[in-house]
Image 1 (cartoon, rainbow, N blue to C red):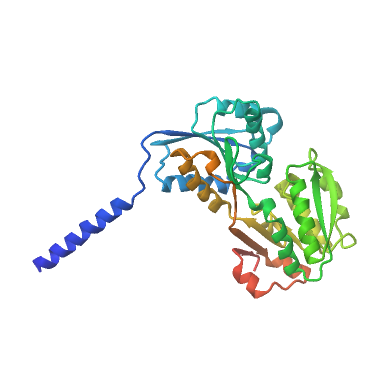
Image 2: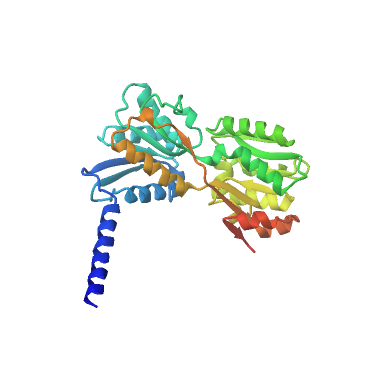
Length: 336
């Protein structure tokens, strides 16, 4: 009995030793990371995933890392440049961004030779607007491109899978928006491949509420289905809800880019990137940068993990039967 007790105790200390050895080693200094945010970043899963990933890597807020946030909200045009300068001048180890507009504000400093802080983007729709050489970033900026625009082609293919007989697909697009060019390029490539025609209704990127005036045009006379543009007029709840309602009323199957305003509010489906996992992947790369890895050794990568949501009530209203294979693979099904 005594021998058994010794073995158990010995085993306990062995496991305790192994657990101690496997704990993340806390970085010795107090790092300072800034966040240059916009309205789209409020409650962002990218940032939640990033901070969680940093903690797993041994960075504990208030102990060896400090986060400093500057949020321009929806007022990007007038104050984001000033916030970019404030963060650049604050002596930070790194600045995190989650939008192309925040990236461009910092890129202005880089172009003027004034950028002195490394930049990492957790999610931007058009990383090529910020970094010319994605494999070997040439300046102070690198990161992960989000799937909002990159998944456009796959999103259209999935819509075709849900609606096999569709021939024309409609989209209201904000002309001149950050994502317009790449969005249309990817749709052109995929639509040709799968044999569908794109029908665009252009509105002013500075007037997203123009989409409300265009809603009566969204009928079966114009097309067979709808794909949302990754822009304010399609994604923000203010416009997304009436858009989803009109599409349902017109009998148009639809697919959205946004988890916050997609299948959950009446669109047939949402096909989006898993932003929390993207944030966690970003933390792994930021850890390497903080430990000395040069930016040009950190290639720009792209989100890979997909989240699929289906609104079964919408499907039934449209007379669409969703294959069981798709329902089984969905992350969430609404209104069963």
